[in-house]
Image 1 (cartoon, rainbow, N blue to C red):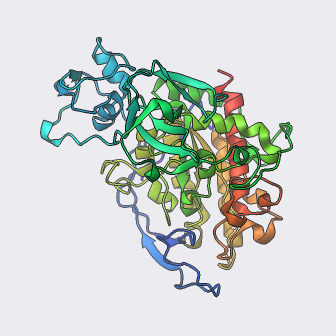
Image 2 (image 1 turned 90 degrees about the horizontal axis):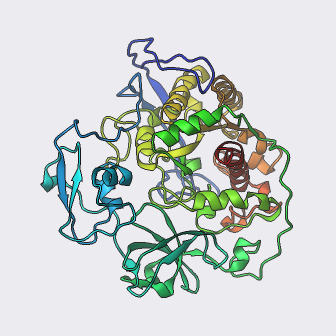
Image 3 (image 1 turned 45 degrees about the vertical axis):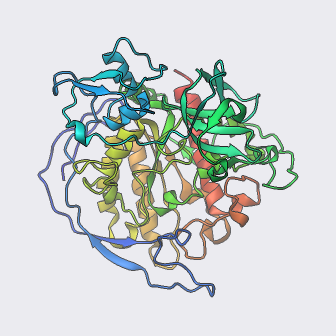
Length: 501
């Protein structure tokens, strides 16, 4: 593996090759999440485990390169120009995805196009710098399941299913759409557009090509988003004043604006964030409720603006809150994230790491990172420093603000001292690079069972799985508490970095 030096400032540092490749044998303890079907350690009804923890040894097989550079936009000199013939239902968005370029890149190469123009079957589009066999072009990635009706004159997409929702923009008649959700009464649909973003629109103005019964409800009754429970009468929330500071969030400084600006210059999207981690991050209790509108903020209504901001854009499979990450997986260690060839082969190249793959697909401005739980039982804290440092530097090189998160306690494995040592590494690297940190370990101290479920590993879930309902009662559980402190970190970045530009 190679190692890079830096000045300790997130603005002024550069990657340098200092060491030759070294094979490192790493004993890794993979702890499955009992809430996921893929877990091998599902607890039985009597509270016992069906299997003992699986001890595995993993050795990084392909060290990351010394300098990790984000995927470049192809240039006209990198390969012969390719002329693509538009097929039925093609959109600029899915053509860009299939050729691994951006919509803006295609528009710039075709002066007669613009980013909000519908394509016509048989049109020819120039895609410079793409050397590809026409027979190997993949099929469109996203199905077209609806379109704006022919008599609609500017269908308005909104941030929520209400006329009070902020208007994102208008779509012309016959714009193709992918329907991804609906309200309970089916009066509003949430859709993905050909131009990457998505939003809510009145179903009266959408011609639907599928059975709406197959579309999931992603927004419940109005009471839900204002403090109630699904199907209940709803309680009026008590407005909460914005705290002067957040007790468990640190390291958000003006220096991060340079990283944010760098990311924008590289094509990153300001209202998209990535999730990087293991089963604690993969679990749908983490952030997903805010992307599917199954939440209530209660005393934390000051966070509504950050929920709205990151809900407005499509990430890859959903908005950032509910998106399926390519840099997170059950049982993943910190090394897995930075090892080439370990990503999803359906989306990731063989020569890129899962982290590089995630950043290439999402082009986020922020990454929420929590790793280490699966490293703890078999890896000394000093060996944890290297992969986490690589994750930070890869993020900074891609113009992504990394938000480090301390790991929660581990019960029953006699590793409490090692957990503390790991978290000291997290805190030290946060200070060394000048990047934000969420002290989740501190946030769960004093909660019942330290905010852990009965397995002693994964955060506990609120009753009924209502992990997006941030009531004082629910915040006695580990999952809602992580959601709260993560929203607070995103809120600081939104107000002090993004909106300050």
